[in-house]
Image (tube, rainbow, N blue to C red; front, side):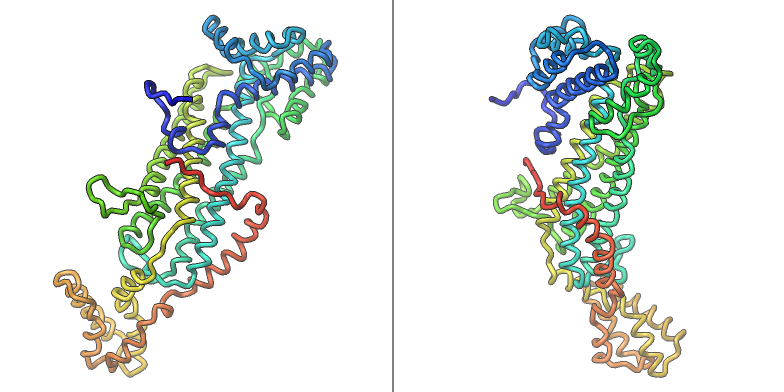
Length: 479
C-alpha cells in the first residue's frame, strides 16, 4: 500500500515505536476488545438467567474479529457516537443477537474496560522490555567490573570507580522502576459493568432486584477477561487516577533512561564510551567526521515527552465532575497511547545502545592516570607520615602543591607534575620512584568490582532467572 504524504503522520508510529506496541493501540485491537467485552457480558447475563440463547452467543463469537468497519464508520457519521455505531455494525452481522448486544451497559463498559485492558497489556510489554535492558546492562557490568575509570561528582574528577560499577547504578534505577511497575500491574482492575452513574440500576431492573445475581456480574466478567477483580466502586467511569498511576510508571522509566542517555553522551564526548555507529551512518550533514550520539539524544528527547505527558492524566483526574464528565475523552485518546508508544521506543533504543556500546580502555586509562596523582594524595600523605613526617604539615604542603600542579595543567597546558613536585619536597621523604609505585588504579577503586559481583549475584541474576522466559529480545529500530 502506497504511503500517504498529504496528511500528518505521527513520528511515534512512523519512526519510534515497535510494531507490537503500535498494534496494541490500533483500532483493530480496540474494536476486537469491544466485541470480546460484549460477548463476556452476554455470556454472563445468560449464565445468570436472562433469556439469551447459546445460538446468539455463538453468532456473536463467529463475528468477534471480522469487523465491518465501513458500516460502523458510515453509521458514526450519521449518529456521532462511536460505541453505538459499532453496536449497530455488530448487529448487522449478528441479526439474531442484535437485540442483546450491550444489554444493560453504557459506553464506558466497552470504552473504559478496553482502556484498562490495553494499559495492562502495555505494562506487560514494557515490563518485558525493561527486563531485557537490565539483562544487557548486567552483561556489560560483568564484563567491565574490573576496569578502573575516573568517577565524577559535579562532573569534576573524583575517586575512581569501575566501568562495570557505573553500569550497576543504571540497573538499580531501572529496578526501582520495575518495582513501581509491578505494584501498579498487580493492582489493575477492570471497571466492570456499573451503569450510567455507577449504581448498576439497569441490572436491578434486568434481574428484578436479585442482589445475589447482580453481585456476580462484575466478578464473572473480570474472570472472562483475564482479571482477578473489578473496581469495588465507581461512577460511570473508573477513577482517572488510574491513568495517572500508569503514566507515572512510564515517566519513572523515562527518568532512568534519560539519566543513562546523558551519561553516555558525556562519556562519548570524553571518547571513553560510544553508542553504536553503523558503517554507513552519517553523523552530520556538514561535518563528515562526526559521530553524534543520535540514539541517546533520541532517548533523551522521547523521555522528555513522556515525563511531560504525565501531566495530562493529572489534569484530567483532578477536574472530573461528580460521577463523570466527557472532557477526559480527547485527552486520553492522545496521552495514554502516546505515552506507551514513546516509552516503547525509548526501551528499544536502550536495548540497542547497551547491546552495541563500545568501550575505549586506553582513553579511559589515559584520563584516569592524568588525574590519579590528585586521587592518590591521601595514600601519599600516609606513606610520608610512616616515613616520619607530620600529618598536619604534610596536608597543608600537599594542598599547596596540588594547586600548583593544577595551575600547570589548566593555565599552561602541561602534564600533571604533582608527583615530581612532591618528590622535590624534602618533608615527604619520598622519591619519584616511590611515588610512582602508588600509581596503580586498582588501589583506588575500593570495592567496586566486588560490589558488582555481589549486586549481580544477589539482586539482578535471581530476578533475570525468574524471568528468563522473556529474555533474549532484540531491539526494533526503524530509523
